Length: 334
Ligand SMILES: Nc1nc2c(c(=O)[nH]1)N[C@H]1C(S)=C(S)[C@@H](COP(=O)(O)O)O[C@H]1N2
Ligand SMILES: [Mo]
Image (cartoon, rainbow, N blue to C red; front, side, top):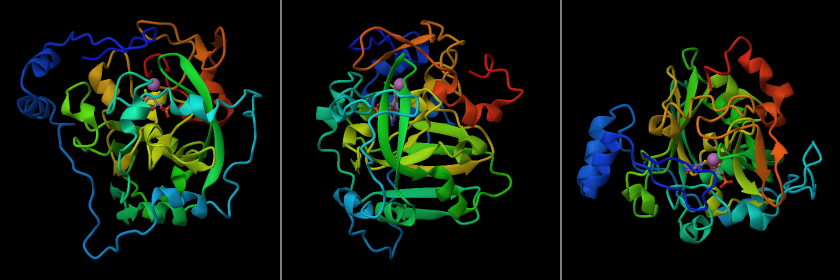
């Protein structure tokens, strides 16, 4: 399995698990089949949702986001977050990315994702809802008010940035599809497109990338679907055309390039949990008191700063989210 190494510029691959070792050793097509066979819960191969028959092809391309934002306060020219921390620059944010579908080298993601085609794009929302619906990107731009949300992003590898996202509360979308009473979790899936995402041809992680939230976490005001950054449409390396941002959780929860959202009654097995369940859990709340088995989570490196700063409980969003976890053992539910 792939192990993260927070100190390495180029992460190391350490194959410790026999199943993954075998997968790596066999030819690609067979490897993919073996992976699917070994993991029936996640092995289901999905292709990008197509437009339902009769749906007009959307005319709005990602470059038209600025038009959709014309009547909103898309970028307010703020320079800090609510704690007074300076925003990271557009250049910093878009040239240091975790996006394993393209590369495990953070600085190689941007050039490799440059030509990723994001139009047309559809997001299928289904599962335990009264009104399942496939949204074209233009529907998502136009149906929901796009606003600026300045959030800190804290990676599980102990680096962080401050980012001015553009997006809308996930709760707006969920209310529209009407979750059924049995719905307790939300599962998110990244597009599966081996022709465009080179590493999806290799068993580095289990593809497509999957994430999950409890429904109440998904409904929290802080949880957004992001469509832009610094008042512009998302760049490909940031997860264009639409990605999740959950600022009080480690960055791996903020799944990129989403094309499926499913309401479920069981906690989805997220990709990093599947890769190493002793190291990455379902909750992944930022918690300086619970270390990663291989490194401390007490401090972090803010990109652009010298030295380290102390990490904050729930990444500094304790007031807004601690009530979600009342009575939960945060050490056991890491
Ligand atoms: N599909 C997908 N989503 C992903 C990842 C990934 O590899 N694939 N990496 C995650 C991790 S570990 C982090 S820290 C954030 C990084 O987001 P950024 O590149 O916009 O800073 O994206 C998350 N979302
Ligand atoms: Mo991360």
